Amino acid sequence: MESATQDRPTSIPAVSPDPSDALSASSKVRTPHRRRLPAWATRWSLEQRVLAGFGLVFAGIVVISAISYRNTSIVVRNSHLDTASHELIQLLASIGHTLDAAENGHRRFLVTGDDSYLKAHRSVLEQAPEYFRYLELLTADTPEQAPRVARLEELINRQIQAEVQAIEERERRGAEGVRHLALSGAAKHELSEIHAVMAELESDEQRLTQIRVVQSTASTRNTIALLVLGALLQLVLLGSVYYLIHYDVTARRRIAGELKRRGELLQAANKELEAFSYSVSHDLRAPLRHIDGYASLLAKTAGSTLTDKAQRYLQTISDSAKQMGQLIDDLLVFSRMGRQEMLHATVDLNQLVKTVIHDLRLDLQAKPISWTIDPLPEVSADPAMLRQVYMNLISNAVKFTATRSEPKIAIGVRDGAPGEIELFVRDNGVGFDMQYVNKLFGVFQRLHRNDEFEGTGIGLANVRRIVHRHGGRTWAEGALDQGATFYFSLPIKRSS
Image 1 (cartoon, helix red, strand yellow):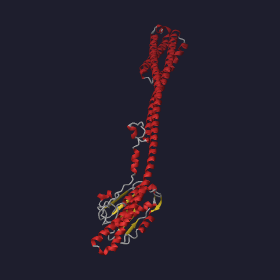
Image 2: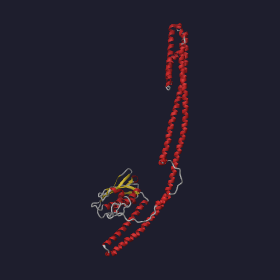
Image 3: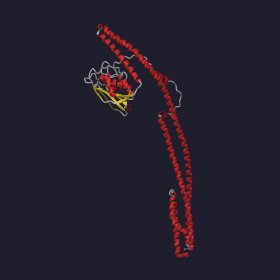
Image 4: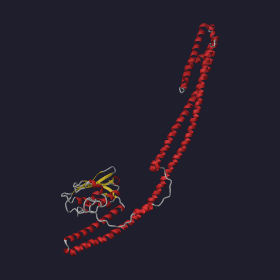
């Protein structure tokens, strides 16, 4: 199992160029001082700032509209009340004129007995109910006038009733019988009281009209001031939003330029590192080949003269040289997987797995393996990288089931989290302790000694690097002597 080992290969002291050196040096270059935004603004994204700005503008519009609507409603209501007041004053004047005419005609009828003088009286009798209904309608929105209207109706009804009684008395007793009524001032007194109540009504309506005029003028003035203030505030808010957007866009352009510059530095550093890696690997391989070769020659030429202990030493030297060569190859693969350009293509996983198993046929000759391979989907991925993933996982499964009498390996797929599929390789090998699961995918991390299972501790690190570059995840589950399952996921958006 590719993990932390107790006999980790001896490290090779070497100085390699580090791309971060160039980047850290460039980061020390001072940039021109820029005016900083408030802390709350820097904590928000551009979208949040724009939404907040337009939200404030919208809220301001709503508040201004609500207050303007209220003020306009006051003006409209006052206008309606002013119209009603004007009509009420006209109605009171008409009632007063009609009552005066009726009273004069009524007195003349009492003196002369001529029915033609009762025309105004009969008009009052017919129109009184309409007058009362109209009075109540015009004062419906001014309840403070209701007592005076009720008093006026009472006085008018009393005046009408007194005139009706006098007319009946005149017809029954003649002119002499009602002479005292015609000469008395009782009717005049009643009429004066009616006029006094109507004067109070008219005076109060004029007072209320003046109040409403002042109120409407203030509401209109406030509405205009509020609209002007609202327009200014909206201009300020829109200006602030524009400034935030401009600041953010400028900052993003500056960051994009800095990222481009650092990307160029990183690309140059990677090229230097790649050249350095191949140079170091070549310089290391040559001595290792010499060590292995001379150890083999020494074993052939002088093997018969060497003691068993010396022969074991030579074999250890040869094995260590080969292991170091394999470690160098794995390190180069690991480095290349992080820099290699990804080529997305449609990959048939069924065919890919068959090819990997065929390529491992030499390792499979030792003992027959029971394979369980589910139908696998087609995915969009880098074919070479995905082949490396399955090569590492399947070869691991083969290696760690070598001690089993009936080795079993399963390769399959299952539904994963939303937006991804999960692929797995399961075996019934030696397994691992879950408390060390976090070490599995690290470089040089091994859970078994090299004399138990060969390896360099880089295979699973390559798996994780490749899967992460495809936007997926890697994890494992297992138990000691109960096998292990290695999972990796791929985004569904890249699968067909």
